[in-house]
Structures are given as C-alpha cells and as structure tokens.
Length: 152
Image (tube, rainbow, N blue to C red):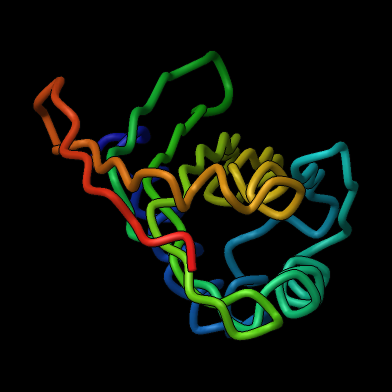
C-alpha cells in the first residue's frame, strides 16, 4: 500500500469512528497535537470536541461518504473527502444531501490537521434553502437529479 493509500484508509477509519460516534476510537487516528478547524473558524482540540459540537448542533448526524482525493507532499499526504450529511436537527426535523468537504493532513500515520466545511450553517440560518429542492450529485456523472420537497 502506498503512503497516499494508507492515508486515505486512516481518514476513512477516522470518519467511520466519528460517525458512530466513538470519540475514543476516532482519537486513535489523530496526532495528539492535531489542529482542527470547523466551519466558521471553530478551533477544536480533538475527537471529543468534534463529538460534543455535533451533539449540540444535531440530534444525530451521519456522513454519506463520496470521493477521496490524495495529494502526496514531501512529508505528508493531503486528503480531500466529500459527500453529504444526513440526520436530524435538534428539533427533530430530518435533513439530507447537506454537502460537506473535509481536508486532512496525514503525517507518519496520524491525522495532524483537519478542516471541515459544510452547508449546515446556511441551512440553519435559512431553512427554506434545502426545502425548495433536494439535488443529489450522481457519483462520477456531472448531472444533478432534483426533486421538489414540500415546504410544510
């Protein structure tokens, strides 16, 4: 397995553990001094902070994993992971197709940096954005399948 393939496997295992959520297991994939920045510039210290943040923002949340892209640098690998979030808001309203992209740096078999972006803030501030249409990007195809979603 190449260094890039190994880094992708580490990130996938981390994401699976994070979505259980099993912060203790997720932490095993992270360097003790990992730098984590979530949407809005929120700095976090580790996997437990991620679980706490997600627990406050969502009733529950999972990731439908999409593609993983790896870029080898001199002493680390950058991994981009994309996909969609699905789950429930704290008030019980379900959501799906909430786009995300995560950027990871993996050095010596550990995640040393994680940056997270997703549409949750937009959807929280303007809930009608995602209710007007639910568009799903078909993997490996540059088409979108859109269906109307009730606003009630």
